[in-house]
Image 1: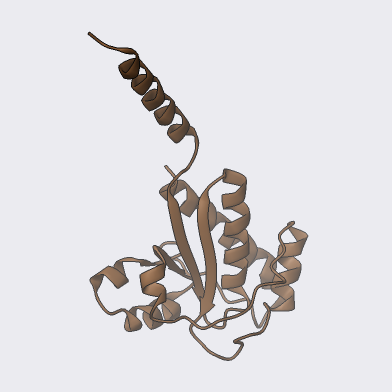
Image 2: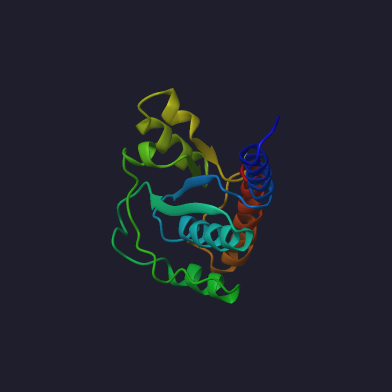
Length: 172
């Protein structure tokens, strides 16, 4: 014979399943990586933060570079502008260098091109580290817009599409 406690448990369990199916409870930590952490990866960080907030996801997003030229600086002014034009503020980000401990902290490390992929994989300590590293656009690179002002808007769109695909893959 079922008692009140059994019915209450069943109700609460059903409620938990219903809430869980509508809310994205999974906590994920993603690191975006490019060469200098001033153009592509700050855009990727800002775009992904914007999209996960819209989706109600509990994800932590950060970015880093493989080169140390811009440590402590803000993103490139052109990245800041193209993001701002789309309603995303990346102006307060601070460039930093990728560090080995990022393998321990982040669940997924998304790089922008083959050079970044090679650099990060060279720092991996084991297969577990290597499994976390992927290119944002699968097998396609995100071009570096640094030397061509006209490439910032198209690069924004590529990164946005990549971020949407990552959300689709990892949120359901």
